[in-house]
Amino acid sequence: MLLAIDCGNTNTVFSIWDGETFLCTLRTSTHHARTADAYFTWYSTLIKHYGIETDITEVIISSTVPRVVFNLRVFADRFFDCRPLVVGKPECLLPTEARVDAGTIVGPDRLVNSAGAYNRYGGDLIVVDFGTATTFDVVAKDGAYIGGVIAPGVNLSLEALHNAAAALPHVDIAKPQAVIGTNTVACIQSGIFWGYVGLVREICDRIKAERERPMKIIATGGLAPLFQQSVELFDSFDEDLTMHGLTVIHDYNKEHAA
Ligand SMILES: Nc1ncnc2c1ncn2[C@@H]1O[C@H](COP(=O)(O)OP(=O)(O)O)[C@@H](O)[C@H]1O
Ligand SMILES: CC(C)(COP(=O)(O)O)[C@@H](O)C(=O)NCCC(=O)O
Ligand SMILES: [K+]
Image (cartoon, rainbow, N blue to C red; front, side, top):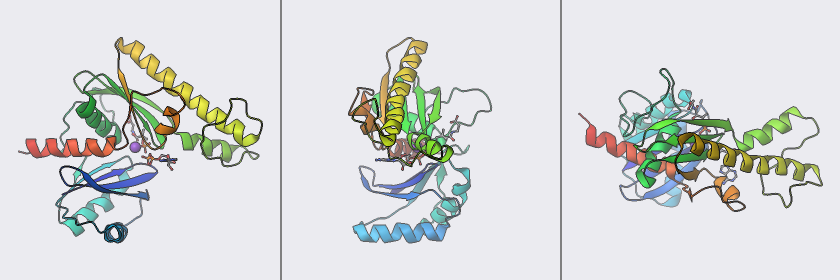
């Protein structure tokens, strides 16, 4: 069985893949100082709680936070006696190319999303991931990641308003009743919600115009459905796209191992 780990700047997600389905998905906050022992304590408690029979023999990691990789490597080695595959490291082969400026280190989550999306939907895609940052990954006809867009994440924008303006409270994102807010919370929700609808639409339209072709828009990340329910922004919402991408990259490396 494969343990796939997707470490973002906010959350770290573990999923167990038995070759056909994800048996479970566990989520913890990302914290670089968490030790291998602490990961295992958390992990084994939840596995026991859910009563899942596991036999982890392989681990694959994608991390947008380089500092956490060391402890995750020790975790894989100590508790599963295996050397994890780390996306972005030279020994981890990718099924598709990244055609970007020389010297650019693309976020591994974006390479994984591109590989997962190409496998499920084919080429000519825009993958929108609502994480700490909101990323747009452009996938060419042949599956190559050819660049994209990085915008501040929804929650990050809400936090930035609260942190910088003394009179603005912390607000959770929600679809506002109207565009014109008649109280402070409604005003902030409107600014972020409708601002993001505009941001996503404008960026996707401009990418399509720049590429001069129709493209499918695939959304992932917990906040995508919130946007989709009010306006048609995406062609598909794919909750486990990053995890799927990790299994695709894992399979590719098994097939092509020397
Ligand atoms: N279903 C959801 N509803 C509301 N907020 C969510 C949901 N899923 C994730 N978030 C929030 O969205 C932000 C990004 O989360 P996540 O996708 O886990 O980011 P990352 O991959 O960068 O760690 C975080 O602030 C998180 O709390
Ligand atoms: C853009 C990101 C911060 C998004 O990370 P996330 O929101 O998933 O935590 C990450 O993909 C990253 O650090 N990228 C490096 C630069 C690049 O992709 O071009
Ligand atoms: K992510």
